[in-house]
Image (cartoon, rainbow over all chains, first blue to last red):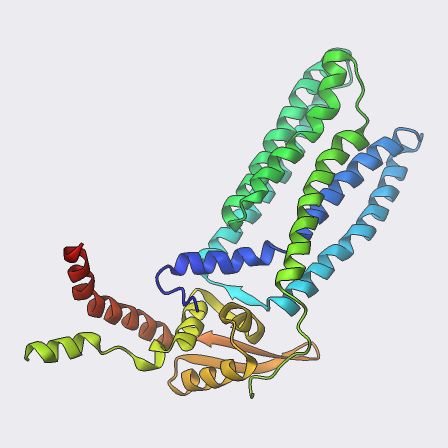
Length: 218
Length: 111
């Protein structure tokens, strides 16, 4: 029996990390990226672009949000629940700050795009800058999550997801070759989701469903 | 105090915590604010009955607080290490280091 007395930090880290071993968060993020790509591809074909994209986003979220609810149930029944200690709470605050910084960065990028106007020259400049911002944002956010949550595979997810926007915009800008958004976002999304599915299978095997809730009274 | 008394004093550790299952419960609770029974079961790999009996011993010693309640309609047992439990685990760790230091020195010298 590992009592963890020799390394309490490692004990805490391993216990916390186990709550991300289910892979459903990865599947959710991957599915979200695929949905974004599919929406961008589909809405290009309609005139009322914003309404169609909102509708498609609503349908996409309705389909993939139950994953998070299932995740909650899965973790609670198989791993239990705990309230983290002060050090972990500090790290979780760091994750929230990283996500907030990502949103702020997104708003700034949108502001830059709007301010640049709709000229051919500004489109070229934005075409070069926006994919870089996207890549930096994805790597920073998932890097921060990997660091603060102690889940190293999120570094990989950050890099893979970071390639989505450059894959869509740069071939068009450099070689005049159009990569459909569903491919540019779908391929990284599927890679991330595939990692999640592998983790999920492993998780379900490692932590089988308890046959019944026991009692501490013996 | 003679040499033997010194050795006895050095090896006197809190026997309640010294038992591996209870030590695992204590260390796992040490690194969190609180946890439910399922969490401890998963972390320690004990059975429900074993976990219950060890928790009783720790609760009687004032090392843990066991709170039985409900989460929604389901019963939920939340376990927390008390301040006395935290201090006892730190003291146990120090006792163990003290007790083992001459042995590790001997081992180091023997190598």
